[in-house]
Image (cartoon, rainbow, N blue to C red; front, side, top):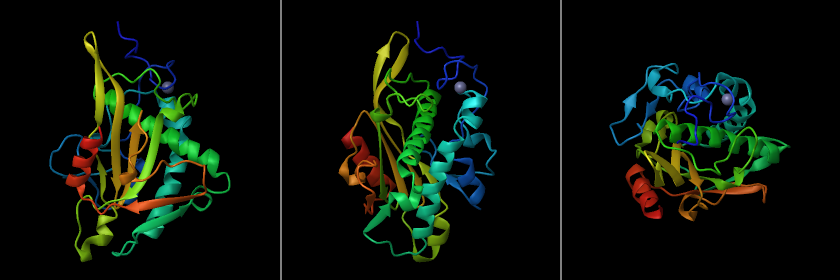
Length: 251
Ligand SMILES: [Zn+2]
């Protein structure tokens, strides 16, 4: 028997599933004129017609309450990071290390906003794993109860996933991508559960790396936490192929 009731929202574990999480945040899709998506396997990059596109959503695995009402603060935290980042990365020449002051990005209450950002990431990763037909680990972070948030680490870095030529930089900033989901799996009868996982997403030059059950590999930046107010974003200069190879080696 599965410990996960497939008809119940994995977040609140109370309401029936009736809602689909966006693969990319809807606000990001709305802002971009042309957006591209690295599909969930290594297929060619595709153009997406609009934020409502079916290709932009996971299969339903959460409830509308969790998707729309309870997690709005999380979405806002993610938007704050994106807005700050976009204000910094507008020119072709990117500094080797970008310094990010958490209180400038997330505001005075940056500690709680950073927690909201982590909750957004937990929601996004949880929906991705379940979409693959895989069970979450027992200690997976819950964005509503905030339980086990520490099992997930996030790191930020700069990459050049698609390479770029000088004139294309402006449009490049609008390219969105998701990396492959990499994980250690354990069979449980007919089902499979993930024990540890690595995942990442690209918003133009920014890479947000997800480390479930791992501490971040410093190549992709240190753990984003509130121990210090200044976070250094390293520039890896890696393209997508290199990122994939490194991530697979880390796993
Ligand atoms: Zn729910």
